[in-house]
Length: 102
Image (cartoon, rainbow, N blue to C red; front, top):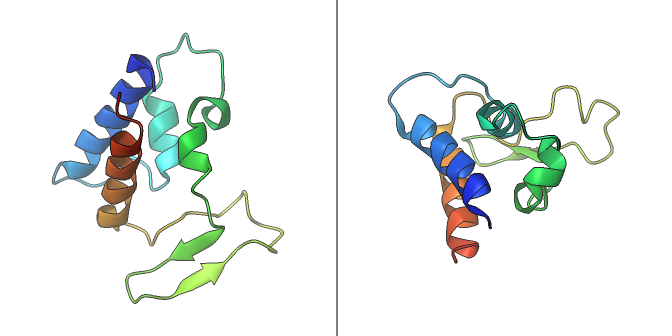
């Protein structure tokens, strides 16, 4: 993982660890907002290791999930975790950063 990408993941991780409301619910939006304006690629290409972890489910604190793999609204209203639930968002960023340590 290059330094630019690692810096973006760390910036988003720090935002999630703050005791303040999320700027966006979707990590993809947080990652995209943290990219410098001069980066020509979209988030899918830049953050491939993040998107590869998508299981097309929305997980909720009660322990169940909603399957979006066959839904026609997958792109419109799809978030991986329940609104405001920071813990799994923090865990996935830590996982990505640890797996791609150089």
